[in-house]
Length: 233
Image (cartoon, rainbow, N blue to C red):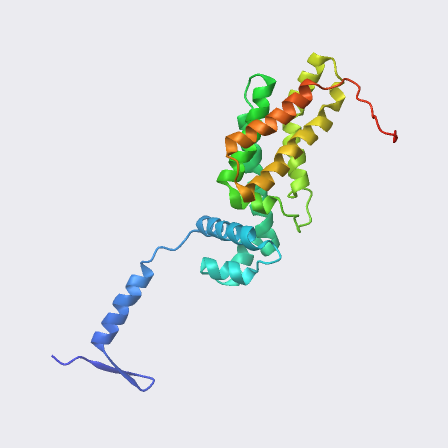
C-alpha cells in the first residue's frame, strides 16, 4: 500500500509521518499540567531555596523562573514580581515559627516553659534551616513585619504573660515583663543564629545552657536593680 503524500511548504510528508506526529502530539497533550495553586506552591518552594542561598538581592526573577521551568511572566502573574514572592515566603516562615513557639508553651513550671521556648526555636532552626536563614536577613521589602527584630518582638509577646505571672508571684513589677521577655527571647534567638552554623554542642545541650543562664538569672533577680558604676543615667 502506497502512503498518501501531502505537500507542505515544499516538504513532502507521508500519512505515516502525520500519524507519528499526531501520536506524539497526543502524548504531549496528555501531560498533566499544574493547577494555578500547584504552580504557586512550586514557585514559593523555588523562591524559598534561592532566597536562603543567595539572599533577596542575589536572586533574580529570571533564576526563579528558570529553576521552576516557566517563563518570567508566570512569576509576575502569581506574585507581581520578586518582592511579592519574597513577602509571602517571609510571612509563611514567620507564622511557622510563631506557631511552633506558641504550640510548645504548654502548662508547667516556669523553668520548663523556658525550656519549651528554647527548644521550639532550636527545633525550627533544625527543621526549617532555609526559612531561618531568610528570617535573620534584614528584609528589603517595605513592610512592618518580616525582619529579625520584628520576629523577636512577636515571639517575646508570647512569653510576656508567663513572665508577668512569675513577676507578680515574686513581688516584682509586672510592667517590666515585656522588657525581660525581649531580653530572654533575643538571647535565645541570637544563640540559635550562631548554632545554625556551628551545630555544636547538641541541641539539647544548647537548650540546657540557655535555660541555665536565663533561669538562674531570674532566680536571683533583684526587685529593684541598682547600677554599681559611676554612670547613673
